[in-house]
Length: 285
Ligand code: KIV
Image (cartoon, helix red, strand yellow):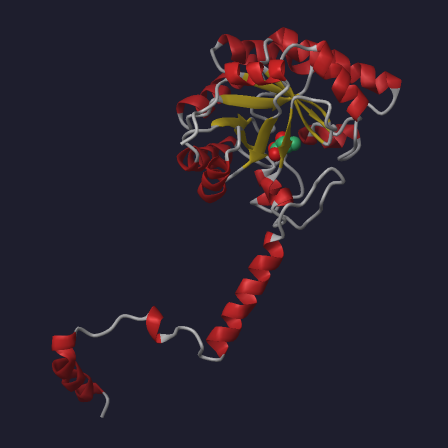
């Protein structure tokens, strides 16, 4: 069994140029299979709002939903560094609320770290949560919880002015005490520059390869989330097709009485057969 990696292993990996691998999981089976595959980190992302609950975004996701999914993932992947994603509203009201909710991820669900969205505007939240002893991962660039303000799920940092804002966010997140940075949907040149500017590991989604590692959404790379597929996704499997084909075959088998076959049934005990048949005769006249 592989050893569970810690923050310090991720810092070593950055130093040595070893890429860090990260995937989302929301339930026991995907967490357990990800651990078996040898993933470095798991994120119980608030993307569960779309992938699991069918919302059109992440905003409706609640703390209680996140905690339930984090607990399932923790049980499935006891030897992986697992990150809980703070949902919209759980850290927006005050530093005190942010700390209380971050602590729930660690205390109730056994998370190794939490992630929250925003740069300069959430500095005090990152500092407060870090001071409470919880490992914080910052998330900048495209921040889906504020997609309304950003004008939709749009790539960020594509002009010099907006790229400089993203760099300022990265510096603020590191200065506030975040231990890892996630950059989403920004040009590779900008992500590469940020990876050099900050000392903490920089992981990305839709941010190119010149960074310390990648995160992908399990439903995207396994091909079972079908509502939409961002440009930055590479599909490694087509679970949707495999699932639909399997369910169609099951329907056909049941309709044509091919399933269940004798090997899927329980036999009457050998020395009970006569008694059993006589008993049935009473009812099947
Ligand atoms: O919630 C999520 O899955 C995320 C992704 C952008 C990695 O934050």
